Length: 210
Image 1 (cartoon, helix red, strand yellow):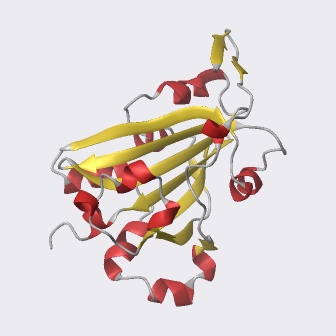
Image 2: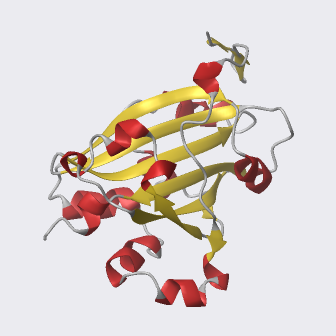
């Protein structure tokens, strides 16, 4: 069990030993840098491209598309081991854990986006401790209203259904099967402190008008 101890200057975290519940729920696809992706970008349907390559606030865009009927459902949040590529892109030392937050973003009461955020423990210090206490508030509000926010290069990947946690799949299109979808990720920095945000656009968003 995790325990959290607040002090005026930092968040002290005790971690549980690794058990089966910490095994990866999320399987990693093959990520490609957008700037190196000319051929792949041409192979992505326009409906996906418009979402993948938009550099603005996803929260704001979803609010607009849903006419304000938008909400966040938290699947899990814990201090856990992270994937190798996440460790590399965030420059996190071996064996060091991070805060992982997984959510589903709903529009019009339909699951539209699966999002996974990885926050290094070194980021969860001082004012940025607030990231640990988001609850069902969208992370995008914290990112895009912070004047210190910087966004790194974007990567995109094609996701098979097996790459996504089962509880997300069970909410998708009334369990109708689908082969693949697309997602993206970027490193954001708040006051120079990094966090990694991955967003997978579910078919119920892309094909919602069909």
